[in-house]
Amino acid sequence: MPVPDHLRIILTGATGMVGEGVLLECLDSPAVEHVLMINRRPSPQRHAKLSELIVPNFLDIDRFTDHLGGYDACFFCAGVSSRGMTEILYNQLTYETTLRFAKALCAVNPHMTFIYVSGALTDSTEKGRLMWARIKGRTENALLRCGFDRAYNFRPGFMRPRMGQRNVHGYYRVIGPLYLLLRLFAPHHVSTMRQVGRAMINAVAKGYPNPVLEIRDINTLAAV
Image 1 (cartoon, rainbow, N blue to C red):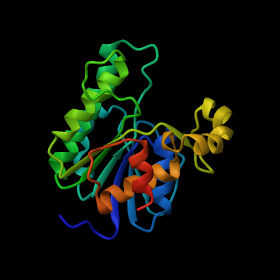
Image 2 (cartoon, rainbow, N blue to C red; image 1 turned 90 degrees about the horizontal axis):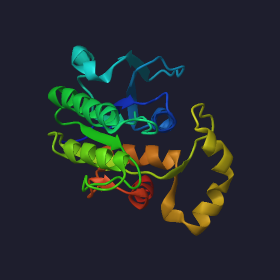
Image 3 (cartoon, rainbow, N blue to C red; image 1 turned 90 degrees about the vertical axis):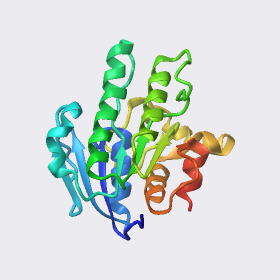
Image 4 (cartoon, rainbow, N blue to C red; image 1 turned 45 degrees about the horizontal axis):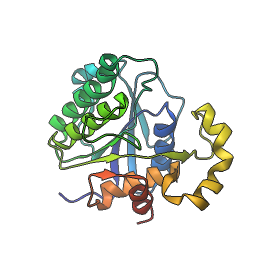
C-alpha cells in the first residue's frame, strides 16, 4: 500500500524517555503531519500537530477505537521495568497489554505499520534465563503475527537523549557524557534518540528488510 507524503502517527509512552525522544523527532520531521499521543496520564507537550488521548488502562483500548482510525503507523514506546515484578505481572503489563493494544489498532487500521520498542538482548526463542527478555521476545513474536501490513521490533541499547528532553533516567544523566567515548570504541552499541526516531519514521516511509532491528540496523535506517 502506498505511504502518504505526510504521515499520521499514533505514539505511546510520550511521558517516558524513549517515547518523548521519538515524539520530539516526529514533531520536527516534515514527513509527519500529525501525532496522536495515547497516554495513561497527561503530557505537558504541546504542538500544532499534536493531540492527546488519555487511556488510563491500555487493556481498555477497545473502548476508544472511534479515535484510532486513519493512521499510518503506531510507535509503541510504552513499557515498564521488570525490577521487583513477578513474571505473571510483568507478562500482563508487557505481553498482554501490548497485544491487546495492537489487535485493537489492527482491527481499525490493518494497513498501518506497527513498531514496538523492546530492547537489546530481547530473547526471540522465549526460552532464555532472563524473565524480561523472554516476555519481550514473546511479545515481539506475537506482534509479527498480528496481521499488520508491516511490523518491526526495535531493540535499542544505550541512547543519548535529545536536547530538551524532560524524561531522562537518572543513570543516563550520569553516564551521558560517556556517549562520545562509546561511539568511538563501540559504535554499534549506542544510538541517539534522534537516530531512533528517524529510523522509525524511515521504517514507515521506506520500509526495512528485517522485522527485528538491532542497534546497527537502527543506526543504518536512521541515515537512509
